Length: 176
Image (tube, rainbow, N blue to C red; front, side, top):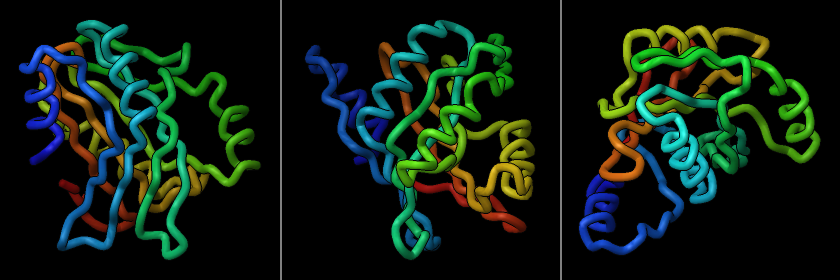
């Protein structure tokens, strides 16, 4: 059962959905992403606030010892200098340097990006693919395998998630 099925079941039951940690992986890839429930809840809250506009932020977390698993413990709100519209989102940078320095001291790192496709598919767009490939090769990010999580649909109704890893110099890998 995937996250979309779980969301639809919880919503159709009339009971509030209990958010749990979600693990994205792929048998053909060496990557796993664990999205902590508090991060997902924050993403949902931010998407509801955004209404019909896209929104997003960065993902902060840590890695397993062998580097194959990213554990996402925080999904930030959109920085105040971000630009958003019905079908566009350009994440700003205001406040992120301070936030990342704070987390760095605690052993947490920039892991990637998240954003919202209102009433749309959670699949990365062409612009998403280009921007994430650029991040993977940009030494300022210090993240050779950034993760992108996209929430698509209606966060107060039925929504779905996708997770994609962008290994430097390789094709993106969609996780299930």
